[in-house]
Amino acid sequence: MRWSLLSLLVAALMVGNAWAQPKLQVVDGPVVNWGTVSSKQSPLKAKVKIVNAGNEELKISKVRAACGCTATLLDKDLLKPGDTATIDVSLNIRGRSGSVTKTVTISSNDPKQPRKVLYLKAVVRDPVTISPRYFAFGSMEVGKEARAQVKVKNNTKEDITLSEFKASNGLQLNVKDPMTLKAGSSVVLLVKVTPTKPGPFTGVVTFKTSHPDFSSFQVMAYGNVKKPEQSKVFEKPSSKK
Image 1: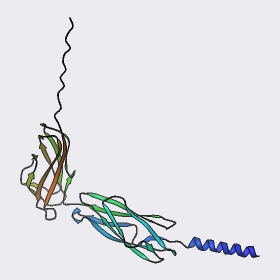
Image 2 (image 1 turned 180 degrees about the vertical axis):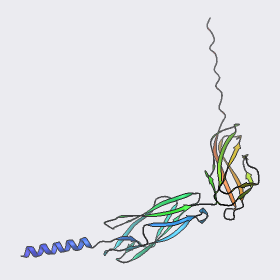
Image 3 (image 1 turned 90 degrees about the vertical axis):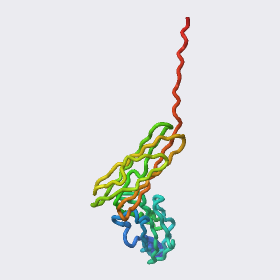
Image 4 (image 1 turned 135 degrees about the vertical axis):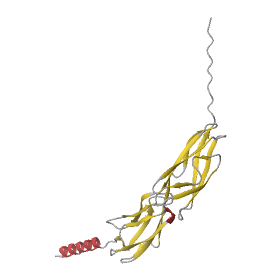
């Protein structure tokens, strides 16, 4: 009888421990969606509330962003049952276009889900976009002309005027100033340069637009200039008599 009572007490204790658990929940769900935005709104910010829906203390050990473009800040890491905490999230969308999805992982002592993933989403649509974001010359050579290009696109339903084009460090542009970019159309900006010395090459192209949200652009140019290749001289072997 004594052993039966002891067994019942142990079983009850085990059941009680099984039910006594911390539980992490994201109050508004695991997705933060800013919808359609402009890169001018960068960085995107939001406050995410989490709650301990269990019946034991919840300990947040780490809040880790998947990349450097996402920042997080947790106001407290110990939550009693029913307590809430706030995570400030910040997403840098500068220079990005189209759909953007990043993740934040919340690590805790929740036994059923020790790692909770939070998804940050947005669709970046700027009135004017440039792709790629810079002129890439790659390998260049002293005394030889090098070329690179980017595409400027008008994503609006109205014409946009591009004007006041300026280029540095010997860069030459293929466009006339000013020019009209029709609604929904694009234009290729081609630059060329003949480098005069070896080493890293950098330059910049700037221009203005008639759109109020993106009144000016700066497009960098990069390359690496090497010395002229020396022509190899081969001597004819003298004929033996």
